[in-house]
Each structure stands twice: as C-alpha cells, then as structure tokens.
Image: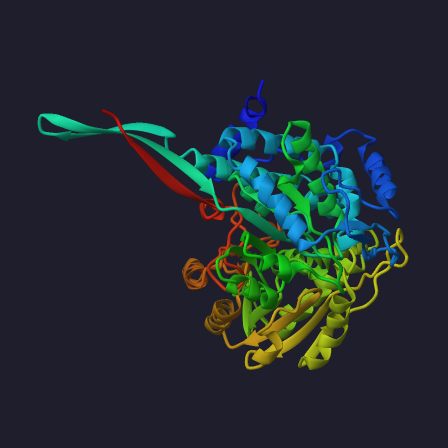
Length: 551
C-alpha cells in the first residue's frame, strides 16, 4: 500500500472540510486523548536534548555549532547547540534535492507529507516542552499550538495544495474540427514548482507559523530551507528532524528540508533571502523586516507582519460577560499573539442591557476583569505564561508613562512551578481619540489601551484608518444593533479586516480554526498572505501545458 493510499481518507476529509469551512480536527488537542504516560515521556525526551549538540542526520559536517536559547521560565540557557552551515552549502544541497523532489507526483508527495505529520504526532509532547521553554507559552498552549493545531494547519496546506495540483487533468486529447478533417493534439498539463523555498520563523510561535509555509512549499514540489528565530530553534528543529527522518525512511533525499540555524550576533537571514536561487519566502515577524522581504526582486513572498487589532464597544447585552472574554484575550500568553486586541475604542457612553454607562465605568470594569483573572492563583500565571524576551518586558514596563492615565500597572505574577518565570500582568492605560501617537503602532506584548471616543462612528473611523495604514489581523466588536453591526462589518471589511462580534464565554478573538478561518487576509499592511487560502499554494508553482500533434 502506498502512503497516499494509506492516508487518502485523511486527505479526502481535509479537502471536504476546506470546501465546507466546517469544523475538522485531524489531531486531537486534548492531552487526555493520548497515552497517560505521554506527557512524562515527552518531558524526558525534551530534557534529553538539553546541553548537547542537536544532530540532524541529513546535515553532516557543519562549520560549527551555535545556540543561544534561554528559558523564559527558568532564565537558564537550554544549552542546545545547532549545526551551522554556509549559505552556499545549504542552497547547493537544496538545489540538488529539488530536482528530485519536483518529479514526484502530487499524490506521492501528499501521502509522504501526511506520513510525516503522523510521525510528528508521536512527538507532540516533547515539541510542547521545547516550545514552552523557548517561547514562554504555557504548557497547554505550547502543546496545542505547536502540536495538534500546527499539524492541522500543515494538513490544511497539504490538502489545499493537493486539490490545486490535481484541479486539471494530467493529459487530454484535444480535437478541433476543420471541415472535412480535424486537428488532434495530445495535451499534457504540468504543475511546475518554482524552486527553493525559505521559511523564516518567529520567536513566539516557531511551529504554528512555520509549518503551513513548509508544507505548502513541499506539497507543490519545492525544496525548503527553514530559518528559525535564534531564540526559538528547538521546537521547529525537532519538526525538521522528523521530516528528514520520514523522507529518508521512504527513500527520498532528506535534504529536501534543511535547518539553517544562526544566532542574534551572527545572522544569515538576509544572505539566504537575497540568494538568487531562493524563489519563495515565507516570513513571520516585524513589519520593518517584512517590508524588506517583500521588496526583494524576483521573489514570491508570503508575509505576516505587525498589525494593530481593535475592539469596538458600541452596546452589549451583558457587559461583565463581554469584558471577562476580552480580559482573557489580552492576558492570554501576555498579549504575545498577532491576533491579540490592543486598542479598545469605547464611546463616552455605552448601553449595557437596560443601563447607559460612562466610559470610566466601562474602563474600570475592564480593569477589574483583568485584575481578577491575573490574580487568580489557579489561572493567572497559566494564562499569562512568560514573556519571551526582555524587549517585550521593557515595553510593558515603560509604555504607561506616555498615557493619559494608567488604569492598571504591570506587576510581577508569581508562578509556583517556575519561581524565576518572566511573568507580569498586563498594562492598561488610557488615551483620547486625538492621542494617535500613543496607539497608532503595535505595542507587542501585555499592553492594552482604552481610547475614549465621541461615539461609535468615531471609534469605527479610527479603527479603520489604523488598519488601512498599519494593518490589522483581527477586530472584535460588540453591538446589539443590527444596522451598527452591518456598518462595522462593511467598513472594516473594506480594509480587509475580519470582524468577530459579541464574543462571550470560552472562545476568543485570538483564535483562528484550521480548515475554517483564514488567518490574516493578505489585504492590508499586516501581511500579504493568508493561511490557508488557494493563493497560498498556487503561487508556489506554475501551470505549463505541452502539446503533441497526433497524425
């Protein structure tokens, strides 16, 4: 049985879910769905990787070994060293591997890639610990985001790619009547991959943000070089290693996927990205570097950059339920998510049920909701996680001095399991609608701003203008008025921002579901690509038609 036949049911179900946009999860995100000893085994495997060289079977004879990762929970170095190679060696290996990989049929590639995800499934727990101790995510978020949720996004890319690669027939007999005779041509349609793909990872979601690009390029026949963030290498290094093992075990060149590690003081990203043989680039990170990536000539790029996400509060049925939901959204992983809300546009008065409340009352209630969450000994530190790097911590500690009023000062939050964890509560500060210099840029991390506006129309205008100029990935809105809902939806959609209305309970604006939600629209400055729409895969190959005249 071929790997395609083995995994055909999973692929068919994934393609069906993509078309229906319905709920589908190939990989369960509840740890209890796995064996009882899986978490302990995963932790043991992770600990066995520390303080030694991370060997990659497919990548021998490095120039040297480097690594700089420090756990945000222990503030201790992981001690993992990664093989470092010259850019020319990486590109040369990838070029050789590409010429083999591109000739493999779409079905064969798809089957092998799903097989790699099945192999990865057995390592979700060690990938989780590696993610926790490089990003600062809580353990459960690390497990879900870098394990099942990332695997589902990868499967989504495989399924979308396979569907697009098989959209047209491989061969067709074409005949045109010409009076008493006819012209007959045998036509073959060939999807031709573009070449070598570079995937540049980020420090906060090193697996979730990288796997879609990796698998989209692989399924369409391109070879891949994975360039992780130097502070979050281990989680994606494990994934690359498992991909290489799957390729080698099935008789393929494992150099089809390579790891290109570097350090903050000796970076190789620009050298690889600008190499003439690199034709595809996936990037997640700051807007400044993302703009550089998009400016490189001769490259097809897929970027996710910074955005300024808004909350618009017009009217609510249950203000407490809404603010508890929003408090969780801003606190989750200390706001270190590209989907986290930052700017809360609140009119001078807000209708809540049968009451009309002032801006100050709504802001005070938001403060209470955040304080109650982060001070909860059973939830606070787990929801917040830890701050990935010192720059984010300093931003949260010093930004408040610029605001009109500080509603909530950032304070250290004790983590009973990790006493040295870099964990703080969110900063909540106030600004007026005229203080654009305070809220017109992304303040990545645990920073939220309540902005007083004259009314909902002004709130919407500001949110729309910021999204158009600086980008936005999400927008949360609360209204009990259908015409206001339509107005918000129309205006924000015009600048390519999706709106989530009236969220309460255990689902948050931060969350985007594989097979159903498009992550980033690609239509505003927050990024030029979307996970995972057809364009995300079809721009990685070109249709070429050949014709042969039949006598």
